Image (cartoon, rainbow, N blue to C red; front, side, top):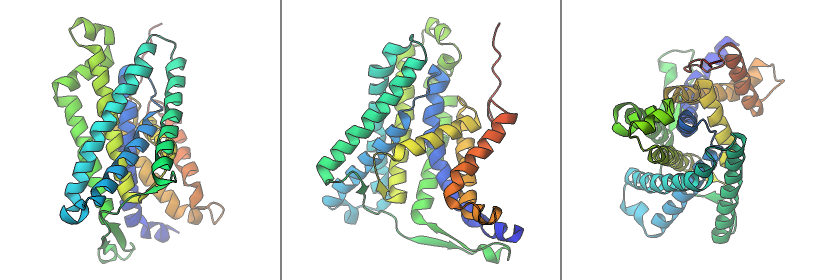
Length: 328
C-alpha cells in the first residue's frame, strides 16, 4: 500500500498546490475582513463567482473582436485579470457601504444574515444575466492555455509515477502565488497596510490617531474582493465551465482554509489553503486504496474536513493563529 501511495505523490502535489492556491487567495478575503471587522463575509464566495463570470464575459468579447489570435495569451490573461479585479473590487466596496456599514453597531448575527442575503442576491443576479445573454446559466469560456508538460518523476526515483501539468495549472499557480506575495507586502510594508493592522488591533484608538477607519475598511473590502474576483478568472481559465453556484462550495472550503490556518491571520490563510488543497487531492487519489474500496474519491471533502476537526481539537486557534485572551 505504501508504494502505491508514494506513486501518486507527484501528481497529488501538482494538482493539490494549484487547487490550494485558489483556496488560499479566496481565504485571504475572509481573513482580511474578519481581522478588521470580526465579520464573516459569506458573500465573498459569490464575489469569486462574479469575478469568474465577468472575466469569462470579457474573454468572450475579446475573442469576438479577434484579440485571441492577435495578442499573446498571457497578455490577454493579465488584461482580463486587471479589469476583473478592479470591477469586483468596486462591487466589494459597494456591498460594504450599502449592506455592512449601517450595521456595524448591530448585534453580530444581523450582519451575518445580511452577508448570506447578499450571497443569494449575487447568485440570482448573475444567473439572470447569464440566462438572458446565453440562454443557459452554465457558461463555457474560451481556452487560453491548452498545452501540457510531462514530468518524468520516475527518472528521479522508480517509486514515483510520471506526472503531467497543464500550462494553465502553471499559470494559475504562479499568478496566485504572486497575488499572495503582493498582498503580504501590501499589508506589512505599506502605509495602508499599517493602517489596516492598526484598525484590526483597535478601531477606536486608530480613529483617535487620525486614521480614517471607514476608508481603511473600504480599501480592505476592495483589495479582498479584487483578489477574489481575479481568482475567479483563474478558476474559469483552469476549469473552463462555470455556473452561479460555484462560489458556495469553493467559498465554504476557502473559509475552512482560513480557519485551519488561523482566522484573521493572512499567512495562516495562505498556509491553510495550500494544505487543504493538497489534502483534498491526496484523498481524491488514494481514499479508495486507504479504505479498501469502502469510500471513493467523492468522499474527499469528508477526509479534508475530518483533518480540519482533528487540527482544531488540538489547536482551536488554527495553525498560525494566536490564542485570544479575554478580560473578565
